[in-house]
Length: 424
Image 1 (cartoon, rainbow, N blue to C red):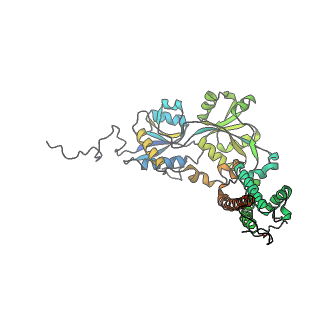
Image 2 (image 1 turned 45 degrees about the vertical axis):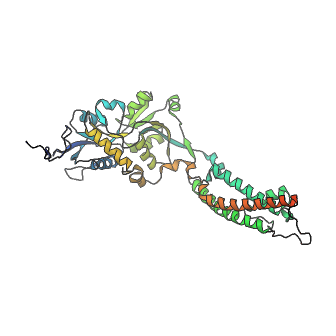
Image 3 (image 1 turned 180 degrees about the vertical axis):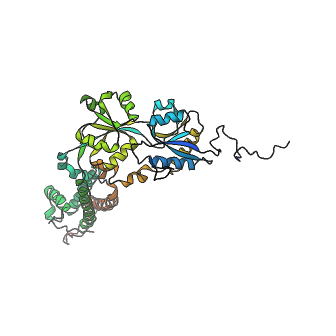
């Protein structure tokens, strides 16, 4: 009997089946999706007056991209499930569903029921609190327009250029003789109010590029300061979880969320101090009325919440968690294939991006709560510093070298000619 020809397996497959029939079966897998997602941006189920539901959201887009990247065709249908996330995972455990797609946080106790894919999104438990305006910081807000490094470099450059001009001019210009005149000249140059004439041609060559640099830096400083004046100076009402415990404060989280177990079992917050809020839209009202002093969300959910309410609330404490993944029955080979597909998409930078696909629709960025984020560093002005510094350094070397040669008697100044204001 000749076995040289290729074997065709059931489903017209040319490769050996893996033992589970999901890869090549004609029957679509039943993938459960939660209808009770607190953040509809991740999972949204609409019926649109039809029998077939329309499922969308960031987590659904990721799942579709991951399945499309598999090396085989995988038919599936999304089946809405109206219940808690834990109840849906238990349905996967009993194999009423072949898997579950959504914003499922990967927690240790959930592995009793399902296997999780590799995380497609980083996760954390984030404590969000109200911001407290700090009016006194406006006294020094102008210092935040530039970074500390920028202030240091700019001051050093200005002292260096001014000193170079003073050294060149001091023997030819009575208005710039003495340390006091040099210091006043350094200050007045910044505001273009200097009245001392710069007579030496070499000194003018040093001063010109630096005046242009001051013009650009001053304009940038004005723009940066104007931008920062519109951002609220604030700090969190509560900085950490220990402060909340000492204050015997009440905290809030999504109703029927795994965050309840995290708060009670990990952070050891008493059950009576945890308020489960049924809708994410009710959190701002609860925080403003003082019903809760802090809200706890998963990392991705916190990003969405802060993007919507960035002027009123801020992150106080972050507890690192494993991530968000998709769930499959215990021992399912599909878990490995989905994980490999997720890793490939991440490596190829083809994973749908949370920031661009979801958060870009909101009115403010996640960095609006960071007042130092808009401070300008020296990088945009590196070219100006390099040009002005090089010219000043060259002029300084020339002047010092000439003075040394004069003192050594290697060169002599012609006494019959008046001292030139332009020795170069």
